[in-house]
Length: 211
Image 1: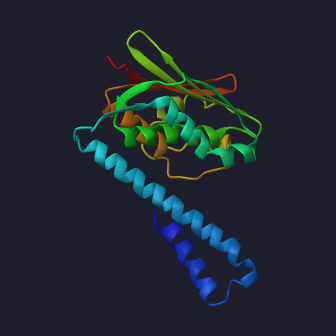
Image 2 (image 1 turned 180 degrees about the vertical axis):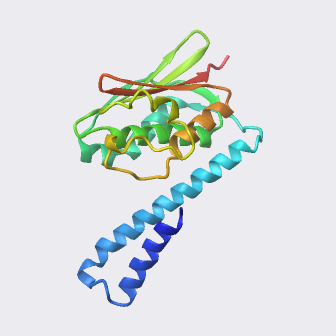
Image 3 (image 1 turned 45 degrees about the horizontal axis):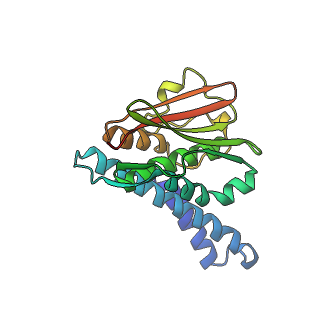
């Protein structure tokens, strides 16, 4: 329901304008307003991505370096990684070209890394691997932390499903991230799976090898 964040934003803005929120507190509330607007923007972008992919339109694929994309995404999370003192391991080739739709694929990898960082505990581990199989590339994004209950694993890709609250105090989002990932991977004719045991959770998806 979008009404709750919109009401929050409107209430804080009105409080600043009418003086209810004192000047010394205004920066704190402006940060909350900024965060809420960013969340709404992410929701809007997510819903547009799903709508576009579910429309059945042909994907505009291009060739680019997936290893470089992974490195750039990790850099974009640098602040969060430093705040939580998360150790990052990259087991990826120096360069690995793929042919997929760039923007949607970037969104998929970004969502998976965001999910891993969100549920990784302080001083935890984030590991990203890219390996070559017989006919496919296999990309794995793994984080340490509390595992997902076995009965919940089949549900994690469902639309608007939110992973068990006990796994994280960070409840940002509307449960669309993993649904979008599966939609994007599926639109490329590929598969994604998840396993969670012994304090490690890993999402693995396939990509076509370029002939």
